[in-house]
Image 1 (cartoon, rainbow, N blue to C red):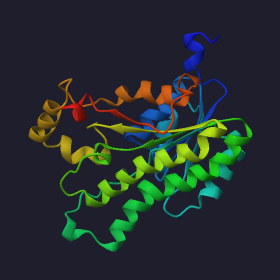
Image 2 (cartoon, rainbow, N blue to C red):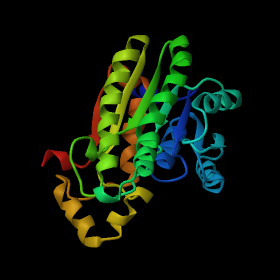
Image 3 (cartoon, helix red, strand yellow):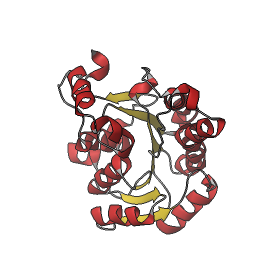
Amino acid sequence: MKNNQDLFSLDGKTALVTGATSGIGRRQAIALANAGATIVAVGRDSTRLDETMQEIASQGVAIAADLQTIDCKDLLSDAVALTGPVDILCNTAGVNLRQPSEDITRESWDQTLALNLTVPFFLAREVVPGMRKRGGGKVINIASLQSERAFANSIAYGASKGGVAQLTRAMAESWSADGICCNAIAPGFFPTSLTQAVFDNPEVAAKNAAQTAIGRNGELSDLDGITVFLSSTASDYITGQIIYVDGGFTAK
């Protein structure tokens, strides 16, 4: 029987984290590194990737890539060449353009769906054969409050995040018999580049905090535990779940 510390240890594991330049992705990279994982940090901005690597004491490698243009097969090939097989995939990169419905173009719609929904599927599909060969792995997607609820000026984003919730369940149905657990974290309001407009408005930020059962908005450190848990053997019988880390926002 494993002791509690071993249940959550990621020693010897490699985690590929997209969107690792800032916000939730960077925080996940730090949390997973602190639990012992080797990190493949992926993002577009090489300077900010370097900052992430400094945060985790260069415990892994950084790959500067635009997920909307790079082939997922090539990205995984680069990662494996640098660190070996990937055991944990965090599909964290995303975009929210916050456009009113009348301002949404086909281009902006496609951009949102591509990064938030299409890339997570195709990147996971590339990772799965290696995980299957080694007897299992972990896929963590990022859902949203908008996987369940509607918010203003977010039709494309809401559609993509509703899709992420069902994608996660479908991934689990397809791959969990091979030991590959697929789950999604649905954050409440956390201070990131995607939510800067919300936090720049004190009245809106206070209203969101009041909507939670806890009475405050999230801090990025609040995501450390769930990220490590879903990446570790402690969650080996949990799959197909969308776990809301929202301070009770959806409970009220």
